[in-house]
Length: 406
Image (cartoon, rainbow, N blue to C red; front, side, top):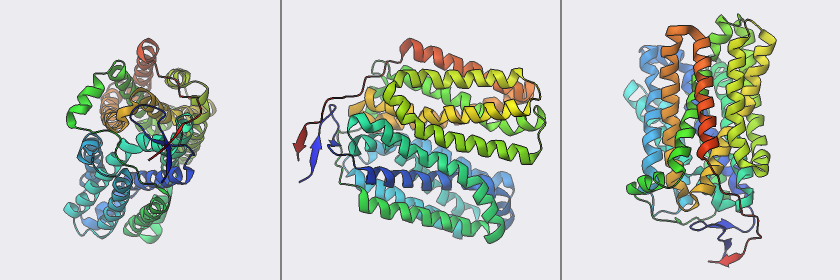
Protein backbone atom coordinates (compact mmCIF):
# COMPACT_ATOMS: atom_id res chain seq x y z
CA UNK A 1 0.00 0.00 0.00
CA UNK A 2 1.35 3.45 -0.86
CA UNK A 3 1.63 6.35 1.56
CA UNK A 4 -0.34 9.45 0.63
CA UNK A 5 -1.63 12.64 2.20
CA UNK A 6 -4.46 15.08 1.81
CA UNK A 7 -2.94 18.60 1.85
CA UNK A 8 -5.98 20.24 0.24
CA UNK A 9 -9.55 19.18 -0.14
CA UNK A 10 -10.10 16.96 -3.12
CA UNK A 11 -6.47 16.21 -3.95
CA UNK A 12 -4.05 13.42 -3.17
CA UNK A 13 -0.29 13.97 -2.97
CA UNK A 14 2.65 11.79 -2.01
CA UNK A 15 4.15 12.39 1.42
CA UNK A 16 7.56 12.04 -0.28
CA UNK A 17 8.11 13.88 -3.60
CA UNK A 18 8.12 11.60 -6.65
CA UNK A 19 10.70 13.55 -8.63
CA UNK A 20 11.18 10.68 -11.08
CA UNK A 21 7.54 11.07 -12.07
CA UNK A 22 7.96 14.84 -12.42
CA UNK A 23 10.94 14.33 -14.74
CA UNK A 24 8.93 11.82 -16.78
CA UNK A 25 6.12 14.38 -17.19
CA UNK A 26 8.70 17.02 -18.19
CA UNK A 27 10.01 14.63 -20.87
CA UNK A 28 6.46 14.26 -22.16
CA UNK A 29 6.07 18.04 -22.34
CA UNK A 30 9.40 18.34 -24.15
CA UNK A 31 8.35 15.75 -26.74
CA UNK A 32 4.92 17.30 -27.28
CA UNK A 33 6.11 20.89 -27.67
CA UNK A 34 9.02 19.86 -29.89
CA UNK A 35 6.56 18.12 -32.21
CA UNK A 36 4.24 21.15 -32.08
CA UNK A 37 7.00 23.56 -33.16
CA UNK A 38 8.69 21.40 -35.83
CA UNK A 39 6.49 22.41 -38.82
CA UNK A 40 7.51 26.06 -38.38
CA UNK A 41 11.11 25.15 -39.22
CA UNK A 42 10.28 22.48 -41.84
CA UNK A 43 7.37 24.09 -43.68
CA UNK A 44 9.20 24.72 -46.97
CA UNK A 45 10.53 21.16 -47.52
CA UNK A 46 7.22 19.68 -46.32
CA UNK A 47 5.26 21.73 -48.87
CA UNK A 48 7.71 20.99 -51.68
CA UNK A 49 7.72 17.24 -51.01
CA UNK A 50 3.92 17.02 -50.99
CA UNK A 51 3.40 19.37 -53.91
CA UNK A 52 1.29 21.86 -51.95
CA UNK A 53 1.66 25.52 -51.03
CA UNK A 54 3.37 26.58 -47.81
CA UNK A 55 0.04 28.09 -46.77
CA UNK A 56 -1.63 24.70 -47.06
CA UNK A 57 1.23 23.00 -45.22
CA UNK A 58 0.86 25.64 -42.52
CA UNK A 59 -2.56 24.21 -41.72
CA UNK A 60 -0.63 21.49 -39.88
CA UNK A 61 0.05 24.12 -37.23
CA UNK A 62 -3.52 25.42 -37.22
CA UNK A 63 -5.01 21.93 -36.85
CA UNK A 64 -2.89 21.21 -33.79
CA UNK A 65 -3.78 24.53 -32.12
CA UNK A 66 -7.55 24.24 -32.70
CA UNK A 67 -7.77 20.62 -31.57
CA UNK A 68 -5.49 21.41 -28.61
CA UNK A 69 -7.93 24.08 -27.45
CA UNK A 70 -10.90 21.70 -27.65
CA UNK A 71 -9.01 18.82 -26.05
CA UNK A 72 -7.97 21.00 -23.13
CA UNK A 73 -11.63 21.68 -22.38
CA UNK A 74 -13.04 18.21 -23.04
CA UNK A 75 -10.38 15.75 -21.84
CA UNK A 76 -10.94 16.12 -18.06
CA UNK A 77 -14.61 15.16 -18.36
CA UNK A 78 -14.09 12.59 -21.13
CA UNK A 79 -11.48 10.69 -19.08
CA UNK A 80 -12.97 11.34 -15.66
CA UNK A 81 -13.16 7.71 -14.56
CA UNK A 82 -9.72 6.58 -15.76
CA UNK A 83 -6.48 6.27 -13.81
CA UNK A 84 -4.51 9.45 -14.61
CA UNK A 85 -1.35 7.41 -15.20
CA UNK A 86 -3.09 5.54 -18.02
CA UNK A 87 -4.37 8.79 -19.50
CA UNK A 88 -0.89 10.32 -19.59
CA UNK A 89 0.54 7.15 -21.11
CA UNK A 90 -2.18 7.25 -23.78
CA UNK A 91 -1.25 10.84 -24.66
CA UNK A 92 2.43 9.91 -24.96
CA UNK A 93 1.44 6.98 -27.20
CA UNK A 94 -0.58 9.40 -29.33
CA UNK A 95 2.53 11.60 -29.59
CA UNK A 96 4.51 8.67 -31.02
CA UNK A 97 1.71 7.66 -33.43
CA UNK A 98 1.21 11.27 -34.55
CA UNK A 99 4.85 11.78 -35.48
CA UNK A 100 5.01 8.45 -37.32
CA UNK A 101 1.88 9.37 -39.28
CA UNK A 102 3.34 12.75 -40.25
CA UNK A 103 6.71 11.22 -41.17
CA UNK A 104 5.08 8.66 -43.49
CA UNK A 105 2.11 10.72 -44.76
CA UNK A 106 1.82 10.53 -48.58
CA UNK A 107 -0.68 13.40 -48.72
CA UNK A 108 -2.07 16.37 -46.79
CA UNK A 109 -5.13 14.64 -45.26
CA UNK A 110 -2.99 12.01 -43.52
CA UNK A 111 -0.51 14.66 -42.41
CA UNK A 112 -3.38 16.67 -40.89
CA UNK A 113 -4.70 13.52 -39.19
CA UNK A 114 -1.33 13.11 -37.51
CA UNK A 115 -1.38 16.72 -36.37
CA UNK A 116 -4.95 16.34 -35.06
CA UNK A 117 -3.80 13.43 -32.90
CA UNK A 118 -0.96 15.62 -31.64
CA UNK A 119 -3.51 18.33 -30.75
CA UNK A 120 -5.49 15.83 -28.66
CA UNK A 121 -2.34 14.75 -26.82
CA UNK A 122 -1.07 18.30 -26.40
CA UNK A 123 -4.29 19.83 -25.08
CA UNK A 124 -5.04 16.85 -22.85
CA UNK A 125 -1.55 16.67 -21.39
CA UNK A 126 -1.46 20.41 -20.69
CA UNK A 127 -4.87 20.44 -19.03
CA UNK A 128 -3.69 17.78 -16.57
CA UNK A 129 -0.10 18.94 -15.94
CA UNK A 130 -0.77 21.11 -12.88
CA UNK A 131 -3.10 18.54 -11.33
CA UNK A 132 -0.51 15.79 -11.89
CA UNK A 133 2.18 17.92 -10.20
CA UNK A 134 -0.12 18.18 -7.18
CA UNK A 135 -0.33 14.38 -7.09
CA UNK A 136 3.43 13.78 -7.30
CA UNK A 137 4.84 16.18 -4.68
CA UNK A 138 3.72 17.82 -1.40
CA UNK A 139 1.87 21.10 -1.89
CA UNK A 140 4.76 23.32 -0.80
CA UNK A 141 6.92 21.75 -3.55
CA UNK A 142 4.37 22.18 -6.37
CA UNK A 143 5.98 25.40 -7.73
CA UNK A 144 9.34 23.62 -8.00
CA UNK A 145 7.72 20.64 -9.74
CA UNK A 146 5.87 22.91 -12.19
CA UNK A 147 9.11 24.79 -12.85
CA UNK A 148 10.76 21.51 -13.85
CA UNK A 149 7.80 20.45 -15.99
CA UNK A 150 7.65 23.78 -17.84
CA UNK A 151 11.40 23.68 -18.45
CA UNK A 152 10.48 21.07 -21.07
CA UNK A 153 8.64 23.82 -22.99
CA UNK A 154 11.63 26.17 -22.87
CA UNK A 155 14.03 23.41 -23.91
CA UNK A 156 11.76 22.53 -26.85
CA UNK A 157 11.60 26.22 -27.83
CA UNK A 158 15.39 26.38 -27.97
CA UNK A 159 15.89 23.08 -29.77
CA UNK A 160 12.91 22.51 -32.09
CA UNK A 161 13.32 25.38 -34.56
CA UNK A 162 17.11 25.57 -35.05
CA UNK A 163 17.83 21.85 -34.71
CA UNK A 164 14.76 20.87 -36.75
CA UNK A 165 15.72 23.25 -39.55
CA UNK A 166 19.36 22.10 -39.53
CA UNK A 167 18.59 18.38 -39.47
CA UNK A 168 15.87 18.80 -42.06
CA UNK A 169 18.47 19.99 -44.56
CA UNK A 170 20.76 17.04 -43.82
CA UNK A 171 18.49 14.02 -43.33
CA UNK A 172 15.10 15.23 -44.61
CA UNK A 173 12.00 16.48 -42.81
CA UNK A 174 10.41 13.02 -42.56
CA UNK A 175 13.39 11.63 -40.66
CA UNK A 176 13.21 14.60 -38.28
CA UNK A 177 9.64 13.62 -37.40
CA UNK A 178 10.77 10.03 -36.87
CA UNK A 179 13.32 11.37 -34.39
CA UNK A 180 10.46 13.26 -32.71
CA UNK A 181 8.59 9.93 -32.49
CA UNK A 182 11.68 8.54 -30.76
CA UNK A 183 11.53 11.38 -28.21
CA UNK A 184 7.91 10.48 -27.56
CA UNK A 185 8.86 6.84 -27.07
CA UNK A 186 11.55 7.82 -24.53
CA UNK A 187 8.94 9.87 -22.64
CA UNK A 188 6.47 6.98 -22.75
CA UNK A 189 9.00 4.53 -21.33
CA UNK A 190 10.04 6.99 -18.61
CA UNK A 191 6.40 7.45 -17.61
CA UNK A 192 5.83 3.70 -17.56
CA UNK A 193 8.76 3.35 -15.17
CA UNK A 194 8.23 6.37 -12.91
CA UNK A 195 4.56 7.36 -12.73
CA UNK A 196 2.47 5.87 -9.90
CA UNK A 197 -1.16 4.91 -10.23
CA UNK A 198 -3.36 8.00 -9.79
CA UNK A 199 -7.10 7.48 -9.48
CA UNK A 200 -9.34 10.45 -10.42
CA UNK A 201 -9.76 12.84 -7.48
CA UNK A 202 -13.15 14.36 -8.33
CA UNK A 203 -15.92 13.74 -10.85
CA UNK A 204 -15.75 16.12 -13.81
CA UNK A 205 -18.50 17.04 -16.25
CA UNK A 206 -18.70 19.67 -18.94
CA UNK A 207 -20.84 21.72 -16.56
CA UNK A 208 -17.91 21.66 -14.13
CA UNK A 209 -16.10 24.13 -16.40
CA UNK A 210 -18.84 26.70 -15.86
CA UNK A 211 -18.94 25.97 -12.14
CA UNK A 212 -15.19 26.49 -11.82
CA UNK A 213 -15.29 29.69 -13.86
CA UNK A 214 -18.06 31.06 -11.62
CA UNK A 215 -16.00 30.69 -8.42
CA UNK A 216 -14.81 33.95 -6.80
CA UNK A 217 -11.71 35.28 -8.51
CA UNK A 218 -11.38 32.45 -11.05
CA UNK A 219 -13.00 34.24 -14.01
CA UNK A 220 -10.95 37.37 -13.34
CA UNK A 221 -7.79 35.31 -13.06
CA UNK A 222 -8.49 33.52 -16.35
CA UNK A 223 -9.05 36.91 -18.03
CA UNK A 224 -5.72 38.12 -16.64
CA UNK A 225 -4.03 34.94 -17.96
CA UNK A 226 -5.45 35.61 -21.42
CA UNK A 227 -4.26 39.23 -21.38
CA UNK A 228 -0.73 38.32 -20.30
CA UNK A 229 -0.38 35.67 -23.01
CA UNK A 230 -2.01 37.93 -25.63
CA UNK A 231 0.52 40.66 -24.88
CA UNK A 232 3.39 38.20 -25.00
CA UNK A 233 2.42 36.53 -28.28
CA UNK A 234 1.75 39.89 -29.97
CA UNK A 235 5.34 40.74 -29.03
CA UNK A 236 6.86 37.35 -29.84
CA UNK A 237 5.13 36.92 -33.22
CA UNK A 238 6.58 40.18 -34.53
CA UNK A 239 9.95 40.27 -32.80
CA UNK A 240 11.85 39.34 -35.97
CA UNK A 241 10.28 42.11 -38.12
CA UNK A 242 11.02 44.57 -35.30
CA UNK A 243 14.68 43.58 -35.08
CA UNK A 244 15.06 43.67 -38.86
CA UNK A 245 13.21 46.93 -39.58
CA UNK A 246 13.53 49.04 -36.43
CA UNK A 247 16.81 47.82 -34.94
CA UNK A 248 18.16 47.21 -38.49
CA UNK A 249 19.93 43.91 -37.75
CA UNK A 250 21.06 41.23 -40.18
CA UNK A 251 19.62 37.74 -39.95
CA UNK A 252 22.67 36.38 -38.11
CA UNK A 253 22.29 38.89 -35.31
CA UNK A 254 18.52 38.31 -35.20
CA UNK A 255 19.08 34.57 -34.81
CA UNK A 256 21.58 35.15 -32.00
CA UNK A 257 19.12 37.39 -30.13
CA UNK A 258 16.32 34.85 -30.53
CA UNK A 259 18.63 32.13 -29.20
CA UNK A 260 19.40 34.40 -26.24
CA UNK A 261 15.66 34.83 -25.70
CA UNK A 262 15.18 31.05 -25.66
CA UNK A 263 18.03 30.40 -23.23
CA UNK A 264 16.83 33.19 -20.92
CA UNK A 265 13.30 31.77 -21.09
CA UNK A 266 14.65 28.39 -19.99
CA UNK A 267 16.50 29.97 -17.06
CA UNK A 268 13.41 31.99 -16.10
CA UNK A 269 11.38 28.79 -15.96
CA UNK A 270 13.92 27.17 -13.64
CA UNK A 271 14.08 30.26 -11.40
CA UNK A 272 10.30 30.56 -11.24
CA UNK A 273 9.91 27.93 -8.53
CA UNK A 274 12.19 29.85 -6.16
CA UNK A 275 10.41 33.15 -6.85
CA UNK A 276 6.96 31.63 -6.34
CA UNK A 277 8.00 29.99 -3.08
CA UNK A 278 8.89 33.48 -1.80
CA UNK A 279 5.71 35.15 -3.13
CA UNK A 280 3.31 33.89 -5.77
CA UNK A 281 1.37 37.17 -5.89
CA UNK A 282 4.54 39.21 -6.40
CA UNK A 283 5.57 36.91 -9.25
CA UNK A 284 2.14 37.14 -10.92
CA UNK A 285 2.32 40.93 -10.67
CA UNK A 286 6.00 41.64 -11.38
CA UNK A 287 6.54 39.54 -14.53
CA UNK A 288 3.89 41.18 -16.78
CA UNK A 289 4.84 44.58 -15.32
CA UNK A 290 8.47 44.01 -16.32
CA UNK A 291 7.41 42.77 -19.76
CA UNK A 292 5.23 45.86 -20.28
CA UNK A 293 8.09 48.18 -19.29
CA UNK A 294 10.42 46.33 -21.66
CA UNK A 295 7.88 46.74 -24.46
CA UNK A 296 7.84 50.49 -23.88
CA UNK A 297 11.62 50.52 -23.74
CA UNK A 298 11.87 48.78 -27.11
CA UNK A 299 9.43 51.28 -28.63
CA UNK A 300 11.20 54.30 -27.11
CA UNK A 301 14.78 53.43 -28.11
CA UNK A 302 15.45 53.76 -31.82
CA UNK A 303 18.11 51.61 -33.49
CA UNK A 304 19.87 50.55 -30.29
CA UNK A 305 21.06 46.99 -31.01
CA UNK A 306 22.79 46.26 -27.70
CA UNK A 307 19.95 47.66 -25.58
CA UNK A 308 17.31 45.95 -27.71
CA UNK A 309 19.12 42.60 -27.44
CA UNK A 310 19.33 42.99 -23.65
CA UNK A 311 15.63 43.86 -23.37
CA UNK A 312 14.51 40.96 -25.57
CA UNK A 313 16.64 38.59 -23.46
CA UNK A 314 15.20 40.02 -20.24
CA UNK A 315 11.69 39.59 -21.66
CA UNK A 316 12.46 35.90 -22.24
CA UNK A 317 13.65 35.58 -18.63
CA UNK A 318 10.48 37.24 -17.30
CA UNK A 319 8.10 35.24 -19.45
CA UNK A 320 9.73 32.00 -18.36
CA UNK A 321 8.14 32.45 -14.94
CA UNK A 322 4.64 33.25 -16.27
CA UNK A 323 3.28 29.74 -17.10
CA UNK A 324 4.72 28.34 -13.87
CA UNK A 325 3.20 31.13 -11.78
CA UNK A 326 -0.27 30.82 -13.28
CA UNK A 327 -0.25 27.02 -13.02
CA UNK A 328 0.67 27.39 -9.34
CA UNK A 329 -2.16 29.90 -8.93
CA UNK A 330 -4.48 27.28 -10.41
CA UNK A 331 -3.38 24.58 -7.95
CA UNK A 332 -3.97 26.89 -4.99
CA UNK A 333 -7.19 28.52 -6.19
CA UNK A 334 -9.03 25.46 -7.55
CA UNK A 335 -7.27 22.51 -5.87
CA UNK A 336 -10.33 20.24 -6.02
CA UNK A 337 -10.89 20.79 -9.78
CA UNK A 338 -7.35 21.41 -10.98
CA UNK A 339 -7.88 19.40 -14.19
CA UNK A 340 -10.97 21.36 -15.25
CA UNK A 341 -9.28 24.63 -14.36
CA UNK A 342 -6.23 23.44 -16.31
CA UNK A 343 -8.45 22.91 -19.34
CA UNK A 344 -9.75 26.46 -18.99
CA UNK A 345 -6.20 27.84 -18.84
CA UNK A 346 -5.21 25.82 -21.92
CA UNK A 347 -8.20 27.26 -23.79
CA UNK A 348 -7.41 30.79 -22.58
CA UNK A 349 -3.79 30.49 -23.71
CA UNK A 350 -4.68 29.02 -27.13
CA UNK A 351 -7.21 31.83 -27.62
CA UNK A 352 -4.60 34.36 -26.51
CA UNK A 353 -2.11 33.01 -29.06
CA UNK A 354 -4.69 33.45 -31.83
CA UNK A 355 -5.72 36.93 -30.68
CA UNK A 356 -2.14 38.08 -30.12
CA UNK A 357 -1.02 36.96 -33.58
CA UNK A 358 -4.15 38.20 -35.41
CA UNK A 359 -4.53 41.55 -33.64
CA UNK A 360 -0.77 42.04 -33.81
CA UNK A 361 -0.93 41.52 -37.57
CA UNK A 362 -3.63 44.17 -37.92
CA UNK A 363 -1.64 46.60 -35.79
CA UNK A 364 1.50 45.80 -37.78
CA UNK A 365 -0.28 46.79 -40.98
CA UNK A 366 -1.43 50.07 -39.42
CA UNK A 367 1.65 51.23 -37.51
CA UNK A 368 4.46 48.71 -37.93
CA UNK A 369 6.30 46.71 -35.30
CA UNK A 370 6.52 49.63 -32.87
CA UNK A 371 2.73 49.87 -32.83
CA UNK A 372 2.51 46.15 -32.05
CA UNK A 373 4.94 46.47 -29.14
CA UNK A 374 3.18 49.54 -27.75
CA UNK A 375 -0.16 47.70 -27.90
CA UNK A 376 1.39 44.62 -26.25
CA UNK A 377 2.71 46.82 -23.43
CA UNK A 378 -0.75 48.38 -22.93
CA UNK A 379 -2.36 44.92 -22.73
CA UNK A 380 0.23 43.79 -20.19
CA UNK A 381 -0.34 46.88 -18.03
CA UNK A 382 -4.09 46.15 -18.09
CA UNK A 383 -3.30 42.61 -16.90
CA UNK A 384 -1.18 44.04 -14.08
CA UNK A 385 -4.07 46.28 -13.00
CA UNK A 386 -6.47 43.30 -12.94
CA UNK A 387 -4.00 41.15 -11.00
CA UNK A 388 -3.51 43.96 -8.48
CA UNK A 389 -7.24 44.52 -8.06
CA UNK A 390 -8.64 41.02 -7.97
CA UNK A 391 -6.19 38.12 -8.00
CA UNK A 392 -5.65 36.77 -4.48
CA UNK A 393 -3.81 33.43 -4.56
CA UNK A 394 -4.08 31.21 -1.51
CA UNK A 395 -0.85 30.58 0.39
CA UNK A 396 0.74 27.16 0.10
CA UNK A 397 0.34 24.73 2.98
CA UNK A 398 3.45 24.66 5.14
CA UNK A 399 2.40 22.17 7.78
CA UNK A 400 4.02 18.76 7.82
CA UNK A 401 1.99 16.27 5.78
CA UNK A 402 -0.12 13.72 7.56
CA UNK A 403 0.16 10.33 5.81
CA UNK A 404 -3.03 8.49 4.97
CA UNK A 405 -2.81 4.84 3.85
CA UNK A 406 -4.99 3.93 0.89
